[in-house]
Image (cartoon, rainbow, N blue to C red; front, side, top):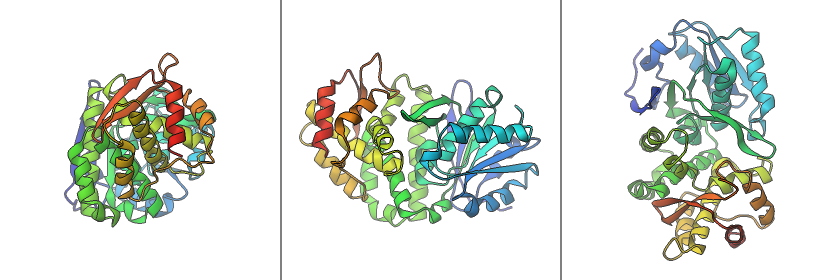
Length: 364
């Protein structure tokens, strides 16, 4: 089999290491062949992605393994719950999967998170490989070992840190991604530039037209850059005790927005974009920034056709109440990621709720 040139990003942790393999035409399993042999593999996908890519993935995977199973879940954030997680575990039990076997995701962020959590849970942890098919999953959800499911009280409240043994990215899967889902991925992409990669922010602005036109060569570079940025941070702080928290820019607000709308009104990336605007407004209120950071960020997000306002029909006090359940609350105090400027983020602990509420109202 002829393999097109792949980009490789490596993550080195104290207890493990793995490659992120990025190819624009195939699932490059050849590079991880030793990880695939002499075991059963369960590919977890959903009813939207499976008809598009399951046959192709199994055809490529079967060159290295002939014991491949697949399990299909319903599609949507609302199915990222304990019921779906238990369905995966029941499937593993029915097919006698043990610690030497392997799970593999095939889908977006929801499938990546749930497959990872099932792998973390089954027999106290088995290996898994991420095969993300959405832009959001390729630049964020598949990398770094955060796994989980949602609770009715909030997003990702149930989960575990469990690193994959490889991430296989085929950027051609973006060809079938709906426009709204593609733009959702840009919300997570832009985040990296706003945190501490000002050159990347400028690169995004310069290449905005190519990115929105989904030029595959540009997207492959974009994904590789994002994976490297995240790898650099995860290697320094795997369990989010310090710098990794910066990756949550906009997320505390976003998760509350998703929860209050029952995961049906906004995609994750759309909610993150709105959340980053709220973070910028709060930075302005606290005088951490110079000038109007919110307006500057709104212009940047408009360039990528992303949402920049919190709808007036969302109850701001109720949103604030939901934020109190966020995983980043420390000793009852809000720990938020704010910004001094676009490209210079910081961790701010003990932000008073009066200021948070004012930021929410100012963004409506």
